[in-house]
Length: 590
Image 1 (spheres, rainbow, N blue to C red):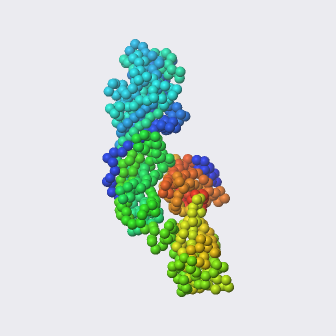
Image 2 (tube, rainbow, N blue to C red):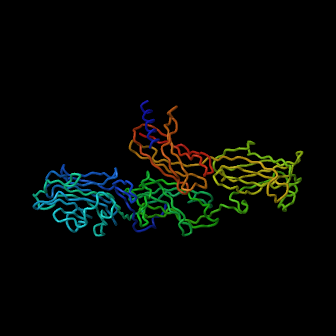
Image 3 (tube, one colour):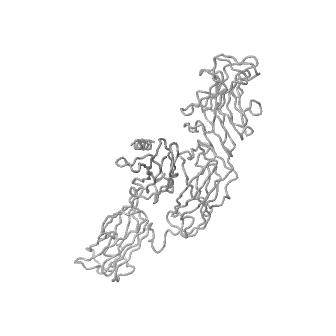
């Protein structure tokens, strides 16, 4: 049972824890924050590497604890010219260049100087050379600090800001401390600053703008949005996309030349979310490749926001730098509101039909006229879901529903040709009743009402008034409809290993979505674990504006184990669907 204990441990960890390539800009840009974001939050130091020449030199990454990158030479010992050196270097990823850089730094060279030898800190770019051609900022004990030493007590103060000029950009950036001067001479061993350094430079934050000039690649474009002759409701678009630079970021929808929405394709574990604060409209991230290098996407598009008719739809896929590739460019025909099925002012459709030959009163009813033959305010109205004869129904999302019933006068005589009012109240907070097309009884008083497949959970009310135009029906009957939420879920890859990452994607069907997206839960269990196969929640997330969602998880404990995953949409008061879950997806961890 060793594998069982390992699996349960991992579940506990889970619980705790073919398109064209034209289009797009020649080169795109995005920000990368290091050590701190503009809001002061801790940021990683992706892209920064360190080096030291001797044991007494110091390089530390204190950013994770809210500190700084530190490069220093220790005090209490001498340091040799052109030998003792500590460096932090930032290197842009392949295919990218630095186009803008702002650094918040402080430091000192308080260890002093001796004959032909002096402590110094200096920032260089795009090459790490201690010459005027490359030195951006420096502080030399023997000659002073032209731009000051900064303020270690206020890391983000203006006195710490170094805005790098364009001539120093393009390649790398280097933060150095060293003993400079003439070879074979040594810097003194005197005391330095309060932290015990003869020379030191602290990097508290960096805001770097990277330029990338490659575009995403898109292939295998399928889905209803790409192929269907007519569209209604929510239609999906599936595709494969890759980008070797900043990664695959968004799907951008343009309708009739006007942008109509953007969908984040894959959060990439949260790395692909725009952190904001850039001030120039460019997205900002904390990683050099913030978004996934390749994705399998299934993106929903809500056509109900469009007027019925023909529209020109373009869907482009962008990378995090804003370079784009057109994935779909076609004319679409939208049909959401067939005029023969919807009453003026109605938001839902339904058709009603009588059984047998309609009796008197067939056709429009004059206001105040008798409704049906014989009309009676004491009529008995019965209705039920068909088949089954129940007054409450739980039905799959997207399935059609039929209601049957009968209208009888006192004594049991059928009321023929009577118009029945039909209303539906979705079961979401603040929803209002929607009038559906009326049903009409046949000669035997029976009726059949066929409802649209787009209904969410709610209450259906049928009413009969003995005279047309009455404000309140004489008799009503109500039926309950429960529709569990419908979700799709994809997991890639289906085989992984300890340290490997799997990615989740899918979308939640149904509208309207709550403001800010619908909350979902990702759950996992061990397949074949018997009594231990309880579902365990390991991620809570929210959908995008159109119902899409993305997440990832990295395995930490070894297999071999097979897991089952599902996405669950818990019931919420502002979403008119009951709790629902996706199909199960199995993943084998080797």
